[in-house]
Length: 84
Image 1 (cartoon, helix red, strand yellow):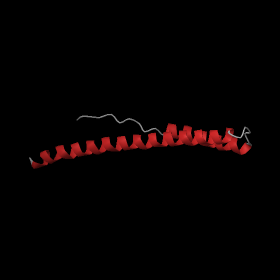
Image 2 (image 1 turned 180 degrees about the vertical axis):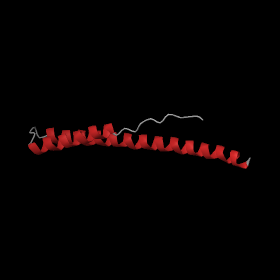
Image 3 (image 1 turned 90 degrees about the vertical axis):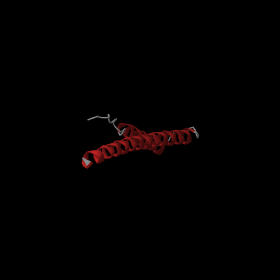
Image 4 (image 1 turned 30 degrees about the horizontal axis):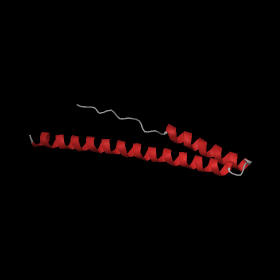
């Protein structure tokens, strides 16, 4: 009888931890998206401010854009709550 009463809080705690980790993953992903957008914007302004776009500027912008798109594909999947 005691075992059944301790399983409910364990399941509740596991569910709360799962929800917390999901929110943490989404927050880290959103922080990364905003950081990459800031970096690309900053690099674009710096590249176009002198009116001349060099090969190194193009490579830097291409690299930053590639990593940004890669980061977008790393979006955490949504975990559905399963009640048993």
